[in-house]
Image (cartoon, rainbow, N blue to C red; front, side, top):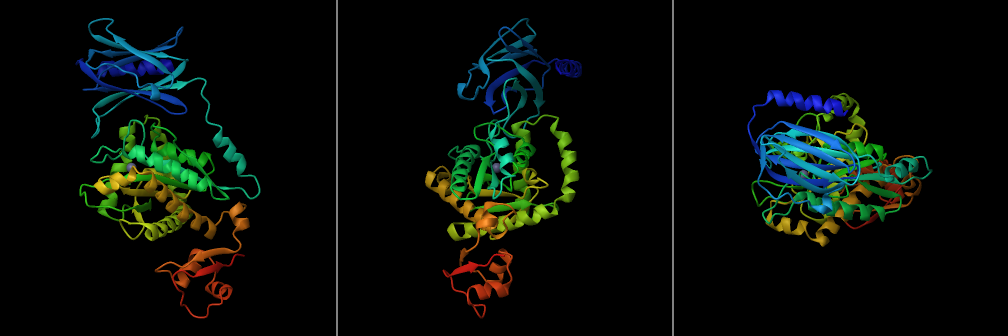
Length: 433
Ligand SMILES: [Zn+2]
């Protein structure tokens, strides 16, 4: 592995002009399996990377580079990196040394500039002792239990190197969506028969495909990705719910939005290895139509809950080609909770009260979905008898029957209704088989 790495850097050495690059920034991020160090460079430069033992270190030699910033280690995010220092072994080389608390496998790559960043060198340190968190295993064993809980993967967008959208008061999307995701997990876990797992529970980046892979490993019945919108027009506001569109976006707005959300991987930094997955998932897309139907259903249930409780941006479910929704077998939706570019909503996004209300609203929609179409063998499937539904403005008897997959006749007879008239606020019994 290390040998291949050195060959790769040698190729790089020969193909790049020997221009002096300057290191202008340094950041670290730690997730459950790796620590990521990022160096901002003003141009692409050749580099060499190797590890040393006793004590464990990683050495990065950047050809013809200089550094003009104090390299300070953000200890909260530093993972297995204990300290950083740099020097100049000869006049054409900048050497950066990371002192590690344990041995690590290395992966490194250069990233091209994006809107937010210049050229970057990314170094991933995989700690040899780290293990995948055991919570995933717990959920896998859960699936074989009778009356198991339904599992909802709650995905806080962006993270780490990728801040997502940024409001005028500098509120970062990655921060508020993680707070909302944690509230959502709490609200879901409080419901009998429902259980949430977070795809990320900290400030680090996960590639888009890695997010739904996590959901699949946890045997999730549903994947909900949480975001906050940004738009050039500051007056634009409200929540929206999106599902994947295979045939392009439902509007120009949705297309722009998908572009910016999908750019996340460029910003967050994916490795070249992720490209193989892309081909695989294109093939899997072909078997996606059942999943897509379920996604549509849960998206409209969430949107309906939102319409009852707050402002929605568009009255219907949006469609866009979001990478993160491409799971072939887990129904997936993306919720844009509010517009971080709208000053009022930016403020609200940071408030606990709004975050909790948003979490309760999404939970309401998710619950409606699972109670109307519970996966077989789940607690909800066994316990939804006597399910009640409170008629909301705009509901029709046919619409409710359709949503809960019961015939209009059975719905009428269970509630002693003759015609089609139902009043807002009336509690209906939903018959189950
Ligand atoms: Zn986003």
